[in-house]
Length: 102
Image (cartoon, rainbow, N blue to C red):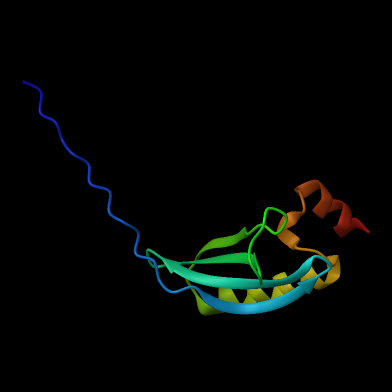
């Protein structure tokens, strides 16, 4: 008779979402949040108000383990948001390349 093993998936260990920075775009104010999930920091870019279909959230980075990495990411992301005058993660790689070349 075959033996059946039940696989128990444990829920991820999710920390509190923390606001890291705010910035403005033509479509509205955005917030960068950090959240530790299973010991690793994940950074997301979300609308400051209620999320709607036109104001989606973006995963900016995951896997950060050091504070200086996080600080550099935030600094660079805010510079790019200001330079591009849009949400950096909303651009396709091609659009990002074109913007960088101009």
